[in-house]
Image (cartoon, rainbow, N blue to C red; front, side):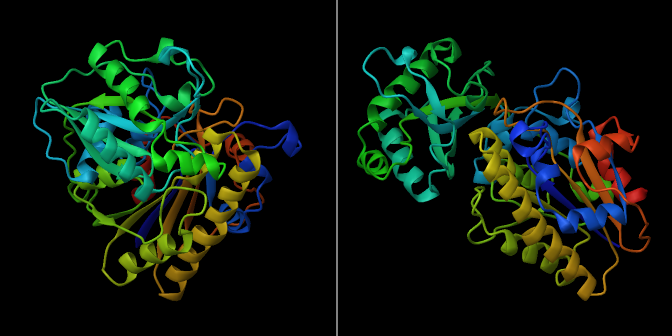
Length: 400
């Protein structure tokens, strides 16, 4: 038996008036997911433990079977694993987003944050901008490391795990009340704006109508993580397909194979089919038992507040990821179980994460059922099936 999880990051949502009172998942044309749901099982799962902030870090750990209450040590340290940073026990890692702030004259703290991703800036442009930040701000205590797109890293030697605001939680707001209380971090953020605001890349971006990446934003502080090997926990030889450093870092920490797909960038126009083919290949040609396919686009479109693009991302996920994986495994003659779900909701109306239940669908190619339901939040909730601890989802996939 082969096992697949397809994770549509932030895919779950709330009903939207402009979609005739439906959610993006309910409104989107998803023939493959609906076909699998009708031949399988749907229900809901609670992926965020009570008392923990809803995020892709805690939620994806949960879906992979790692109870965040036990294993979570901060978001950025997981990304550090992906980048290859060898953290010391006394190091603190922080996510360093390249964000878009308003550029009016006045105090730094009076600016507003417009975009947590700087228009999904390319990794190539972001690396040049981060290099300028490094030259201006890096010291023996604070070291910068380039990641993917807008997502980068700051290592604070002998640092402290301080409380920091997530940029996607404060979009449109004045930043003063959300800046770090630690003066050194706060000063670096303000100085980064001075370094970046008139950088040639940002001047060119503005000329092209793109959001400039004009400031660093620190968040997600934590210490070096310690995850037990996935194969040791589950008995399955596992692989990860994702464009984002967080998921690749979780895979590194869990001793899973990390698959890099050309053109996979975490945005709306990622290489969906390349991800699907990589998943099929690792299961059928490399004798792996399990693959986790993570697609970031629905979450990014939720943060952007774009109903149209979130619907489009879900349709791409259905037609260019899930359908080819199903067809590829069937053509290879493999028996398989596939679980499709979000990690958390990212409702368009608030443009950030919530800890609400998420819908799942579970399909077993060896035991197809005959049902009339489709895969969406409403019908999943109506099914009456519920997994109260998201970290038990992996066992449900394997042992059910």
